[in-house]
Image 1 (tube, one colour):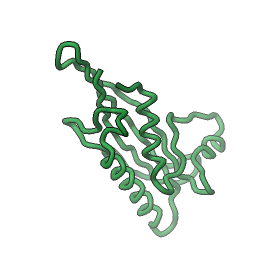
Image 2 (tube, helix red, strand yellow):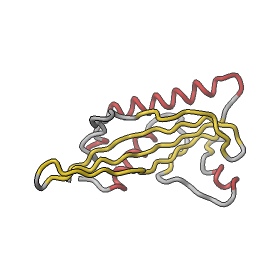
Image 3 (cartoon, one colour):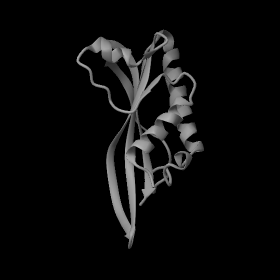
Length: 151
């Protein structure tokens, strides 16, 4: 049905539809210089960005001649903290907007069969915590998404 790059691009496209989402990368950027890495996550002077990567695939054959691939995607996001707690509420709002957007489009525009499995439905919040990223105290989140493809 779909190859990994088509799924990755569909995930990125859904995220980019969300206002003020920041930068969305289809891979985990690695650079030697911290300032260069930081620049990849800054948009309009705000450090706020995401990267998408496939972290696991499970394949099964429930029937003769039919293969089911379930890919697990990790979406990692970061946003600079601000004073007074408002940035945490803004970041939580972005997370919920992402969850809503994927709930509205369970087949990613027909690219996958579903983002609903027996284990989960849509975006799952795996972990949210403060981190230091490129010398900046930030909110961070790890989101999980299962995609199902029939071959």
